[in-house]
Image 1 (cartoon, one colour):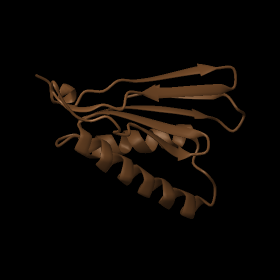
Image 2 (image 1 turned 30 degrees about the vertical axis):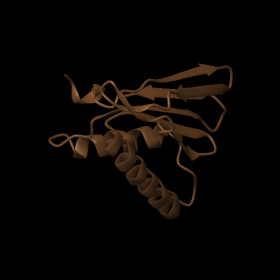
Image 3 (image 1 turned 45 degrees about the horizontal axis):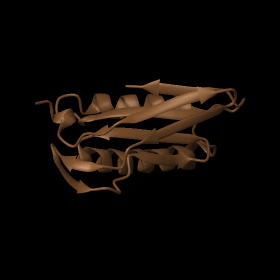
Length: 123
């Protein structure tokens, strides 16, 4: 059994003309046992940027808080909102930093660029 399937989860992101959509299930389970039906897996990082995290529940919560913290630091330093591409690079760097004791998550980033073009990336 893979640790990625221990808590389960499904996330989907899609794009249209100048729009994006992201959805997930809200079930938190331990293999075949349901623990909760209101576990958040999609997070609003900014007004035009969403993050979907499926995988081990503790890593989902930890990674979301860490990314929110790093995003706030970026916005304080740069004095501008983070673009979806920059956020995807930040996420990639955070995941690479923990490559030997990795986060067991499968992230999806969905956002709109400054020109309104959709941006989707899966890692």
